[in-house]
Length: 403
Figure 1 (cartoon, rainbow, N blue to C red):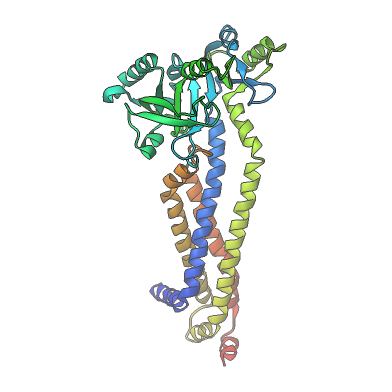
Figure 2: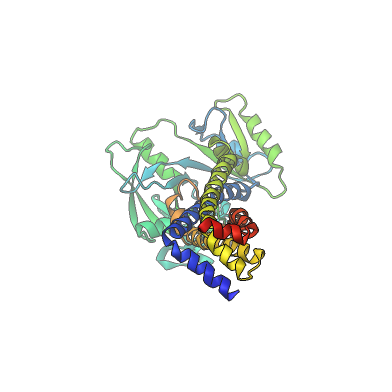
């Protein structure tokens, strides 16, 4: 075994450029494979983690058509409905448009309690934390029209803290004088679910509505969607039908679905993501397999003379074959370990980079284990053919080919 390790190391270092390029190719391939699989698992988790006891009420025409505010009282009266909040996309940016994040106008009186299972208030005014932070933030939002609560990633990226006033430049709800909207940060939340984006801001809907109405920018403000929390025993399907039945004759017909189904609509808009990503993953594995096979075929041709000498000295066919197979496995495992390590190490930077489009990006342990398995399979498949060929080679033929 010791002599085998020495020979394998000697072979790899003898052609260090080729070995290095092969390891680099495997490293890149495993990193990409982990990333591609993580996109699919993140999307699946986002759908599966969404609340089934929360409904989303939107216009039946389009998500971009607002619903009348008068619908809220009627929805609350539907049997099985526990609470309702407006949910209006704001669409602004801080300093640079190239760094977008989500902002939503909500009903401040009930929003925090409606989303108690999705997030918790981590910090409130005057540094309040723990169980009393929720009440402190709720009181601050009730008292301050410009109050807003933000996620931890948003606070860290922009160095925002509780008590700061931040200007947000609107792209949709533009003021008459084109000035920025100002929001007072009264709390920082912490996601309790992986799919709840830590880069969001929630603020008072009445601040948005009253400001626009006072400036004559809108006559009759509406909302993009209503988020509806259901009672624990309520049937989401029956409640959805009841809500849509209320507005069957307008003025805006509605389409109601659970939050999980609503989330799946967005994923469906991207196409068959699992199949697309699966095709990319397959192409990555094929490319790296082809690369390693090519490397091992060249190594096998270069080892013919050496194999003949080893066999003449009494080394068995299996021993000679194992040397080449070990070489293939060392190359693949080295590159695979680097690629898998980089994928795990760069999880946080990638999550930050794609947070707006793919909240909660996570490289699951199962993904890393799958990548390890793929690496082993590639190493064995790429090395087994050249290894068997070298093992079956007769000493005389091997030495003759070198003559």
